[in-house]
Image 1 (cartoon, one colour):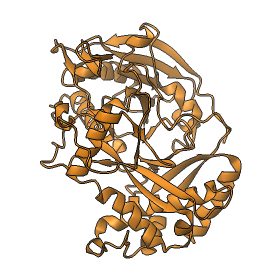
Image 2 (cartoon, one colour):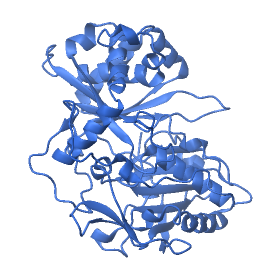
Image 3 (cartoon, helix red, strand yellow):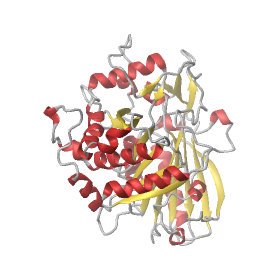
Image 4 (cartoon, helix red, strand yellow):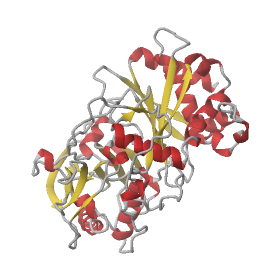
Length: 452
């Protein structure tokens, strides 16, 4: 599919400050927050609305953003090493967030398939503002781009240290509530010390999902893209594999009683045959076996994915916890197992990875981060935006036609994101894969073969 020129021109860049005075202080960042020092961009497309033509909606969004920076005061701050201990924290100094107004010379319908991760979507978000120095960039920039038809896109570029997927969904719910002159939908909980390491740290599990850094990275506001999953310079083919609700039901039928490593106490647990588990197991088989250039059945493949720990801790974190409450879990198997074992066994291994995430395991992983400052370690990561519900947020100008991440194509990250909903139906999931051409051909063949 060709990249469509969206003909975007920037009209205005400004700084948005909290609408009232906020407390100046330093916000502690957990060991989970620390390793997520990179930008995440999301897009929310809206069709034309009679009561909210572009000039009205732009003013409304800007005013709402300013109000929202009061309960989310840290988003108007800056990422800096703390004066006390050199640790990366947020200086809640009220320096402001970014706001960009842009317009496109085409209509929303002319873009065509909004699900397709068009590289041109990069023009609908702003990652930095020229008015600030590189080490003084805002933690969040909102760009509103109006289309020729009267529809518009709201693009957020946000440093991941600030929010995870669930707390960003809560942020959007609050955005919608304030835009509609209602009170906050959820009062965010800013106590990140709930996820602080223990003193002294106690690592009680071997964390195969984490990689020690021999030379810890210096804290820096600009360690963007420092990660095991770096952008790959090689040419990558990328494709979206659509799985309908019926396809997912078929995969579930192939795994009626998933059994991980033979722990009979858990057999048939509902989570074992969830949509996420069967889709991830299917993708893992295809990825591991397409990667195997030498056709080595003894080669081990390690899958990683993130798990929300809010409800897994004792006591549980408040669901309103605002920050990153996700940890990486892993499953490892030899290629021959992934190829020859029953599908239900692979699904069981995927499910077991999350079941490992108890309160003590989570605390141990956080303490491990205190000691070793490492990063997730595996062959690839499945990043799921599937159930976050960004497209369910009801703004005064309606729900988005579609909400999606702005993707960068990385060989080691496979993205799951929702399909567009039509007439109230959930039409399944999209799997975005980026691979070198020969691996992609094999992946595609296996994807079809294992579905049969």
